[in-house]
Amino acid sequence: MSRPEITRRENAEDRVTRFASEAGIPLLRIGLGVVYLWFGALKLFPGGSPAQDLVERTVSALTSGIVHGDLARLSAAITEIGIALVLLSFRAPRLVAVLLIGHVLLIGHVLLVSTPLVLFPGEMWAGPLQASFEAQYILKNLVTVAAAVVIASSHPRVR
Image (cartoon, rainbow, N blue to C red; front, side):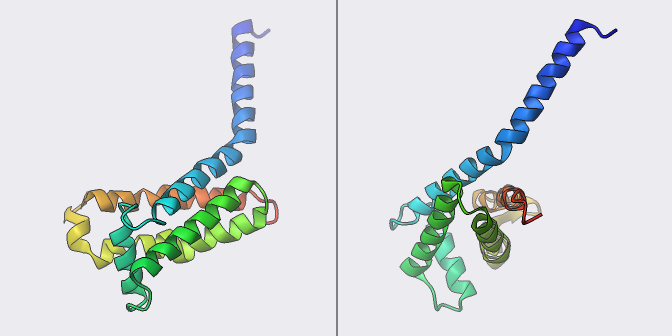
């Protein structure tokens, strides 16, 4: 015969697990959506984003100077805001999957956002494994990549 405190604990664990299962993806969408919206909105205004210079220089370097300055900044802003709106709308799960995987893995965080780590090593690294503040900001995008993959894979047709 089981003891009542074990039964209560198991029930509490079941409730927490059920809550996490039901709320995890929506909370992840909201969190990622807010981050994309916030960072994208900052890029709408010249000087509004602490990442502005880095974004402009990186996009310019990757496009051989074709896209630079305000166009680079505004392109990043519009892309991020668009992704945020789709995430926060809780509609079009397949579109969310495509946008996130496309932005994060192909053109966004893995290639574009991580590129400064290699393009501007003097600014990114103070020494071996000594990442600057900007490099730490970039490296935290590994979490963004993981969140995007989880959200994208949560749609039944994506699995």
